[in-house]
Structure formats: structure tokens, C-alpha cells
Length: 92
Image 1: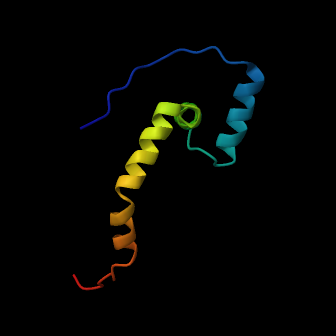
Image 2: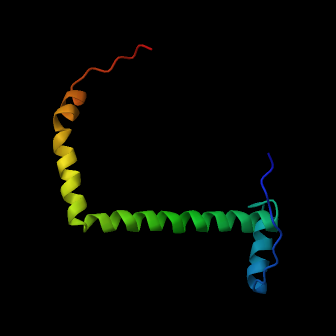
């Protein structure tokens, strides 16, 4: 099924458009549109990853979470030890 799309109009600085066109001419992307799409996707992925990283960083300061994580680790300590010493079979 085809991905839904919408057409947008954006105002870009002329020097940015020129740089984009140079990249397209060098074969970095097949079109100006595709280059902008790739750049936007990359930027969104980076922003989302930074948000996830910030959530994990906040967990480091969350005392109730740290206590719960330690409690869970202690509960599974024996199972983890067993799994570590269980031979792995290559048979399928």
C-alpha cells in the first residue's frame, strides 16, 4: 500500500538551497525533495533518540526506580547464574 503524502511549500534561505543542489549534483541524493526528506527523517530520529536518552538519564536519579531495579535483579540473580552456566546447544 502506498504511503500517504502531502505537498508542502517551505521558504528556505537561498544559500541552503544552493548547498542542497550541490549535494544532489554530486549524487548524494537523487533529488532536492529526497534530500530534504532524508535530512528531516535523520533529524527526527536524532531528536527522538535524545529524548529517550534523557528519559534513561532521569532514571539514574529516580530512587524508587533504582530500588525496584535492584530488587528485580536480586530476585533473578539465581536464574541469571544458572543461565550463565547452562551449556548452549548448537542443534536445531
